[in-house]
Length: 92
Ligand SMILES: [Zn+2]
Image 1 (cartoon, protein in one colour):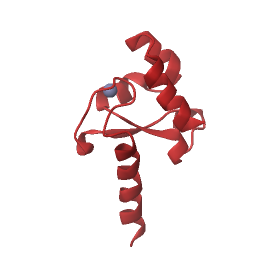
Image 2 (cartoon, protein in one colour; image 1 turned 60 degrees about the vertical axis):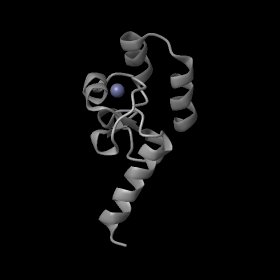
Image 3 (spheres, rainbow, N blue to C red; image 1 turned 180 degrees about the horizontal axis):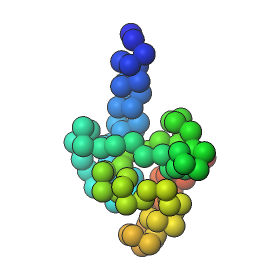
């Protein structure tokens, strides 16, 4: 397996782990429509590790930008404990 194939499988596995759902808005998407979002933004030192990557739709990925994920999520969608917990479990 080449590195790029391995990378593709890895990215796919993260999306499948979350059932192809955007972790922020909770909507389901085709796997190809989902992006991977750095929970802790790259610009803030966030690394490209499984524990820092979650599937997000394009709108959420762009909307969140370099904001703190939880602050942005609550401002945008209000409190949602189960989705917040899902992300917390993944990143901790
Ligand atoms: Zn979304």
